[in-house]
Image (cartoon, rainbow, N blue to C red):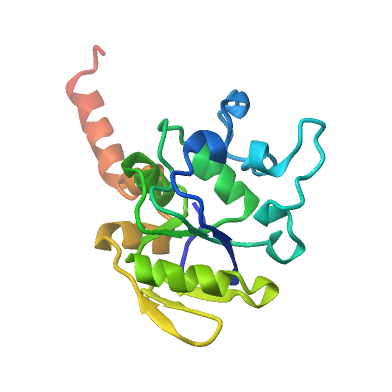
Length: 201
């Protein structure tokens, strides 16, 4: 998993509440078990017409936001079914941070396991960042995980909290497999001892 320390980029405003995982990546695209390749289908039904042409009004289709790495979202982001494909699609598109007043629990935890930082803030702070994000190409925001500070386009700063263990994993690029592999010496020693003690197995 790619390490997360600091992200600076244009923030895309998505004030819609209850953006669920089927909106993030429709069930049609859940046939793969690969983490890559889903970015092109992120928000598919919101981004594209039936004929495959882009819907110009959708925020990520607008020139200023095509390369956004940060989303400022409405309440209850990531609700619905617990598909891990949702953070896969966000990450593959290039999204590293999602800011909202609340997230669905499973989606929230899946983000951390896939290198995305979900940030929960009070409504007034989200409203400020949503307003900042409306500046288009000037909506450059910096999210610093180490200091736990968001810096807006005008230099204003907003502090956020994050679980210490999840922060450690993100900053060191450790997903569940990475955490397990940190114990590889102990695992190898156990397997060697087990084989010696049970040669008949």
